[in-house]
Length: 297
Figure 1 (cartoon, rainbow, N blue to C red):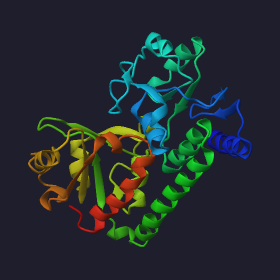
Figure 2 (figure 1 turned 30 degrees about the horizontal axis):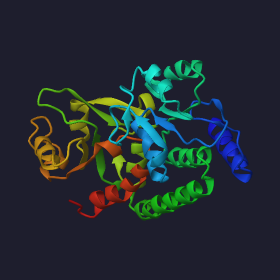
Figure 3 (figure 1 turned 180 degrees about the horizontal axis):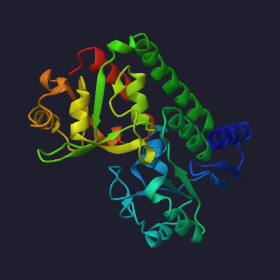
């Protein structure tokens, strides 16, 4: 119901875009935007990516220390440096949900306008793209970009749909690289956009029957070995480390018996994008499909 109301509000606002406008954010909050935001603080890297995708990075005045966007820094993701944020006099503060949610009240106490973005599915990512575009005064552009992304991933999904269930590769997604003595690894399960992307690309996620906060959870190494994945996808966070990470997985003592390692089907992806529910991540569906079924390297 909350998602339906969000889309309904966006559609109504789009029909007659005039400030002030009222939207429903991903925390289910009614938020009034009094004027077109020109000074935006992105208090989470995921929120920055939405403005970049819309070509509105010139309106970003500050980001956290964890963001690769070049702008003034406000400090950590949590707790937020409210005093610093207030001093920059933003028109809008964009934050992530989850662990950042308690910060909303602190910011609103300072009379700041705050919008929470917290997508868990591909469709919610597209909805948030339209939502941010509407807030920022470019609803038509946002709707066009969202439609293009939808057509893009559906084209891949239609190809993958034809793969018989018993022919689909079993996929393990590793969100970090395990050491030799590590007993569990963080992955994506039911309720996460990454699980959905794997499915859209024709993969069978070995963690699909489990869930956790926003769909992410730790999975034991014993369970991973028992599932014997055909493919392992793993994230990296430092440039030019892909081969090193791949070798660590291929030489891991616990994983050496699984098919993915035996057949050297380990694929390394940019963790800065893959772990964010943002428009840019939707493009991974084609890369997944290629690596799962096209012999991608």
